[in-house]
Amino acid sequence: MSATPPPPGGSGPGSPPPGGFPPAGPPPGGQPPSAPPPGGPPPGGPPPGSPPPPGSGDGGPPRWDVPEPNTSDGHPNGIALGALLTGIGALVFSVVGILVIPLLIAIPGGLVAIGLGIAGRRRANRGADRGGQAIGGVVTGVLALLISGLWLAGIFVFGGQFLDVFGDDIQEFERCVEETGDEEECQRRFEDQVERQLEDLFGSGPQDG
Image 1 (tube, rainbow, N blue to C red):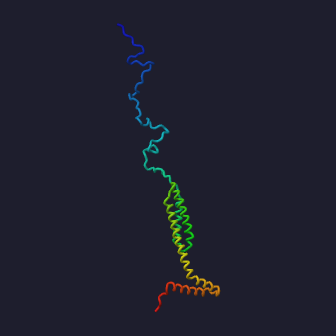
Image 2: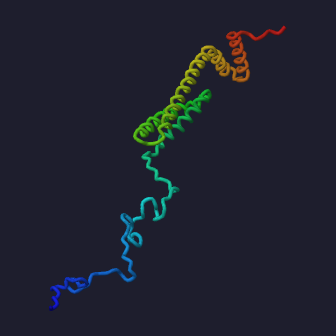
Image 3: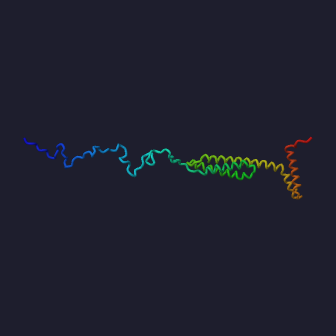
């Protein structure tokens, strides 16, 4: 009985596939190539030029000592600070307004402080800083005007009363100086007349004996 010839194409076990090239086998050493883990970086690290992983500025672990950037949208408001400083200065001059001359600074300073405070408050409403300082400038400016007004009212009232009481004596002093030319004698007479007027207004002092 004769042997059966092999089928065409060499489909038997151990036969090479069509084309004459044997299938690829494992590399020398018997270990198959390892595949990268799912979602991890490719073997050998990230490719050159790739960004660092999240949470690190230089590819290292996350750093917590780096301050966060300031995201405030506030803007400088120097007008508010100027209003506060001007109002404080005007208030100080108004307190010593009994000397009259400081009132020449206190009244204009109070007006300027109010104007700057209103402008600074409007800027604060649009997102600028120092809104409280703008209000402080308005308040101190108003107080400076009120105190200055009280001083002026007192000066006019008491000044008018002084002229009503001592007006004739002042005119007599001026005539005495023009007629005699002796200012010291006229001043002595004027002082005597003022003293008598004060005694008439407030009563005489305690009598001796």
